[in-house]
Length: 312
Image (cartoon, rainbow, N blue to C red; front, side, top):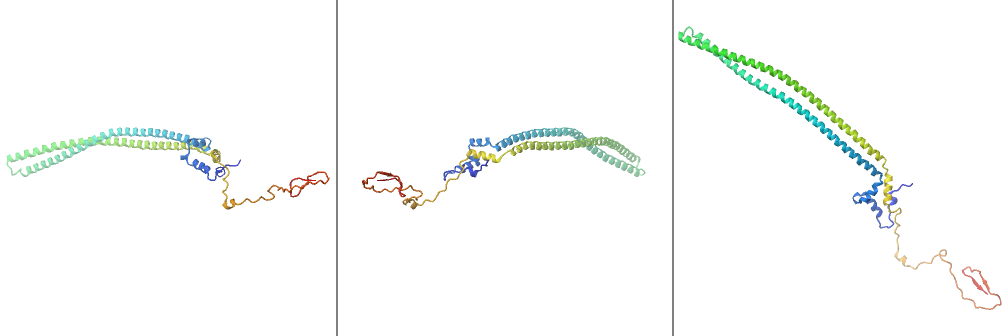
């Protein structure tokens, strides 16, 4: 069967007509098509069937993307819950460590102050003792008693300052031990949290990539259905469908010939012998004479005549 082409099917008998050309342009220009024309063409079009498959599979892809989005939202919610749990656990440790830090700083300050006081009391005691020893031989009994009392008092003050300083150092030592223990525990907790965070993030990214990869596979499987449908799209069949639907003619209009005005006004030339009917020459009838002969009806044909001659 001969294939149909636009050049063979969209002519007009009328030389000035553009119906065939207009049909093609209207078909190519979707904006000028009527819904009925589009529907009529697409019903039997192989491309229409492929486009229907494309539309269907695109809808399936969009649904799979919605499912993927919901899954990823669920994964994001898990990550948020994980972060909140770590935050609460870290908050408890931080509060405890903050309290120890404040306690350690307070006790350290108190210890340093008691040390400063202790050192000063010790210097006062030594100064009083030296003063008493220097004046032991030159001062009277009353002055010596006074120096002795002064030395005794500074010694007591130094002892009190010493005990307070030692108590503060001991207390600071206990706080330091508690702080060190809690610091070790905090470090272990934070390290564990960091391990969990790295592992969780790693697994979630892995899962995220798996979801995206699966989405690619799913999308490609759906797109493959469209490709299979496109393989059955017959371009020539669709062309012939449109041609049969909107064809206008298979022959171009006859050419417009030159018509000379003066030639058309002349007397028509007599047709040639081969074209004209045989001419008839009429002669005058002979005078009737009686020759005594019988009347003969002769059918002999004169070469220049096409009728019978009656002879007597």
